[in-house]
Image (cartoon, rainbow, N blue to C red; front, top):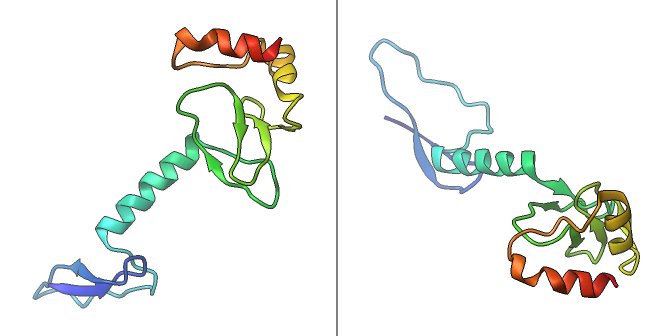
Length: 120
């Protein structure tokens, strides 16, 4: 068994099986163990369905699980999840109703009246 240091978790992990006929496998210096490379695959899958904050200084990835399309990022930027455009907080609901026909809310339908109240 060959072991190598993972560049992500900084722990030794199984790299390759020893073989009488094979040479020692070479590392490119950027090897990650199976556990760490599996988590990076999940992160890459999330990035495929995520949208990035439009604030050029932030670019945080966001995955919307429920709620309306008004996103308030950790950087403080208010933006529309549908079209990824930034807005002042007071204008975003007007934009969502005019451009997208509603606020895109889903999750708890019994609370829909709250969004209508906020918009009016």
